[in-house]
Image 1 (cartoon, one colour):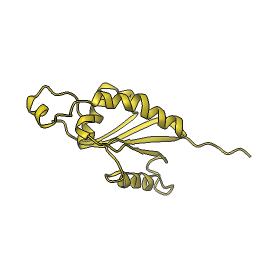
Image 2: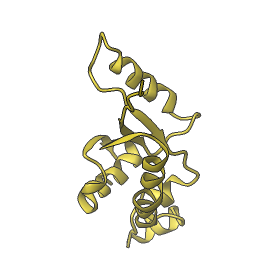
Image 3: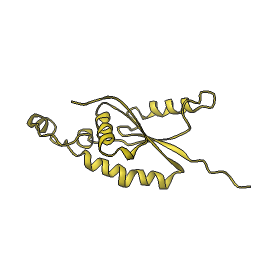
Length: 135
């Protein structure tokens, strides 16, 4: 008897670690995928803990005040390349996934998700962006 391999969509949370909202969001996904709820399919929830949100989630600013107050900011292009070229391929090669990739982000992570949507929309099939920091 052969066992059927199940493939799962991926839900990405880019500003998540066990100390952030990862546990809450994965709990919501678990609840919403219960067979008697059936709001979303069973999914792999992928969280990336972050050390310097201002560096990874912002694009370069020409504003002198931004540069002064946030000296490490403006490296989102590198972080997006990491997601595309290293992280997503790692997840796809390690787990049984479908081609469906979803991003859920808010606040400063929502700013990055918005940038990805405009510059690299093919990275995710679905975008859930809540209250992005579009300052």
